[in-house]
Amino acid sequence: MRITWNAKIIGMAIGLLAGVLLVLVGWRVFLILLGFVLAGYLVGTWLDSREDVARRFRQLFDRLFRP
Image (cartoon, rainbow, N blue to C red; front, side, top):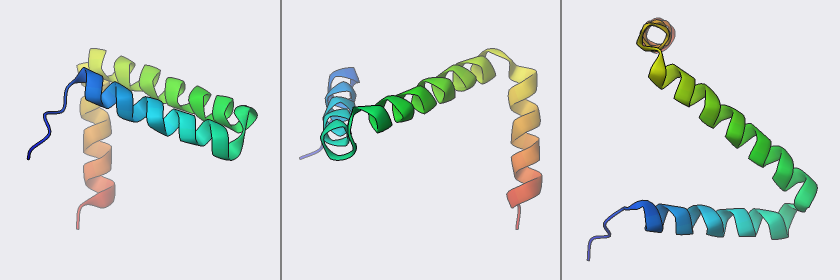
């Protein structure tokens, strides 16, 4: 049986992960992690909107990690 990944399934998985983190590490650590996730999302959104910056990052990572 193959699972179709749609927004509901992804949202449910993220909600489950957030709930487990909240229970295991406490609400302060959870809020810190949530802040880092939000910051990463905003940087990713900015990179998607700026093709020239995304191209430069791709070139940089290619130079750093090319065998």
